[in-house]
Length: 140
Length: 140
DNA sequence: GTCGACTGTTATAGACTATAACATAAATAG
DNA sequence: CTATTTATGTTATAGTCTATAACAGTCGAC
Image (cartoon, rainbow over all chains, first blue to last red; front, side, top):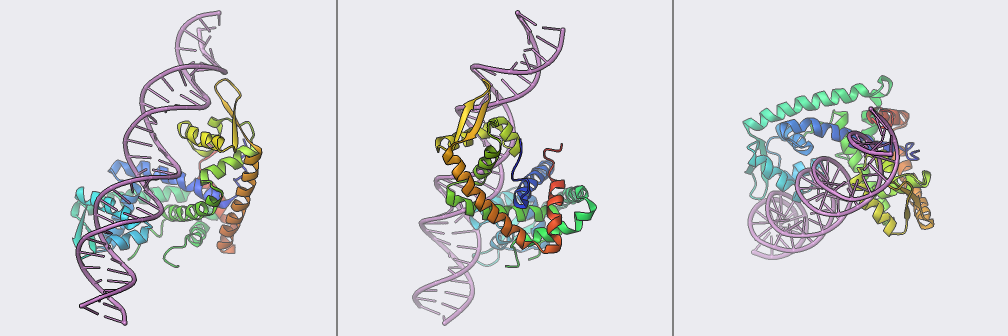
């Protein structure tokens, strides 16, 4: 019962991430939110008026997959989609959306604190820069 | 266009992991393998006779989801499923399975090396122990 | 003003996960 | 030994997330 992949950082990254994501999903679901929805609420709260496309680019969610997510959040009364451009939709949270975003943020904060506390102190400061180096995001 | 979650390790973990997984998937697909299949070939190669259930427990794949995966690998002639127990199926690779597992291993090795090289040297040694602390696996 | 690029949408397919129910076999308790 | 509990593999099903193609409408560059 030996796992020959345990020495590989990419494999451990995948296993650790799926475990952490599952734990977070089980915490955020009490607000009736999925992980992606909770993330979107945070980003739209911080960037009112952002377009669906721009939001999708930030989160690596394609336009085609963004549509039903945004429509669902709007249908729940959490978000408005205002034509800004003729073709673009500017997103902004409703009052109810802001309220739920704050509750979600509290859950995120607690989760992230719990996560950080599990990391041995001597490694803690290294995790973020190491992961950022693996994530070819805004900087490419 | 600001991402208020960028300071959270759990969020970065998720983003980095999905990006890395997508890259790996695109590399391993040239062998006609999915990520989970490549992993299974490695584990069965190292643990001949392991049961489907035990394999699933190692990989956090449920019995019900293991069945079609194992059946597919068997149908491709990569793996045998031999009744060991009356209820259990012992897994082992065919010759062709071993060959493909070796090719997959080469891709894994290259991928993991590439990944490691992206991490700034001063953080490199810290990633693995930090991730292992986040992954409540065999040790719980 | 035309052409190419961008936005949002619909439809569809694939991969992965989660749950329940079932038949069978093994292990345990008494 | 028998009866109950546990384990294994299977089927069926649903939900989530992702990926691609095609379309209509709009914007920008030239």
